[in-house]
Amino acid sequence: VVQSEKGEHRARNICLGTGHAPWIPKAARAALGENCFHAAEIELREPDFTGKRIAVVGGGQSGADIILNALSGHWGEFAELSWLSRRPNFQPLDESIFTNEYFTPEYVNYFYTLPEEVREREIATQKLPSDGISYHTLEDIYKQLYHRFDVLHQPRNVRLLPHRALDHIARNAAGDFSLQARHGLENCEEHFSADIVILATGYRPGLPDYLAPMLGRIPYDREQHLPLQPNFNLRWDGPEQNRIYAVNAGIHSHGSAEGQLTLTAWRSAKILNHLLGEAHYDLQPVPSLVQWWAGK
Image 1 (cartoon, rainbow, N blue to C red):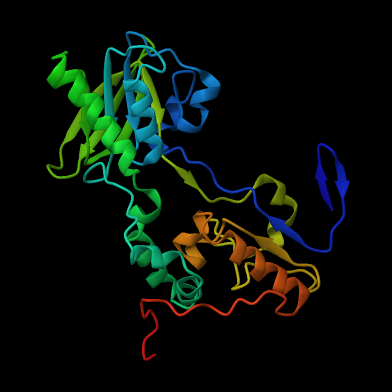
Image 2 (image 1 turned 90 degrees about the vertical axis):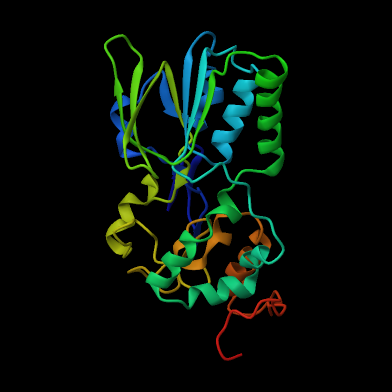
């Protein structure tokens, strides 16, 4: 039984597709409020940057988009803009030819067969194919900075701060914030001040609240990963004829493509074939240009 604002629905099988939730690092949770919030909320809040010190935490696409909009005056002219990232630089999206092979059915099928610790290691090396910054965004940021500082000779009130891992954010009595970060190369503490802090810290998979009545029957792991099988169906303590599927919930089991739209049609066809119990859709993979499997 599925209950929603529009009524109650009954189904033999269900598919979870509510995606990931904004992730707030532990170091920032106590400071959350009107002027310290996740990047996902920025258009709802319509902040006023005029004359204020702004800190953006996170070196991915959402952080870059906020920096570019701030430089364009979208929320008013700031007094100071700081961009902190624990990454070694503000790195571009990796869209190179053979990197795109990660987003093919053959690689997804191969990835699923790997031991858990190997999958975790592989995912850690595949950050930029999915979470890098678009080249055009980086170029536009560079042009904005060049025009401000090298053409107009304005005061250098923008700081790009890679290799900074956030340790703590504290709200001060005056209403502003103190940020403490650790420099990844020099292993020292640094301190920054801001009137507004925007957490461009990404999204994480988690267990949706609506699953609460069934969690006792689903063997999720310590990271709250759902136990997905090859056809995106969950292992659970329930009737075999009643299946639970999940999409965009299996980076840990199916690889980087799970967080992208690239294989949406293929993923949907896998689920439908499994539901029907027959190969209604032809999913024989086209041989990859890269030989992933050993001994083939």
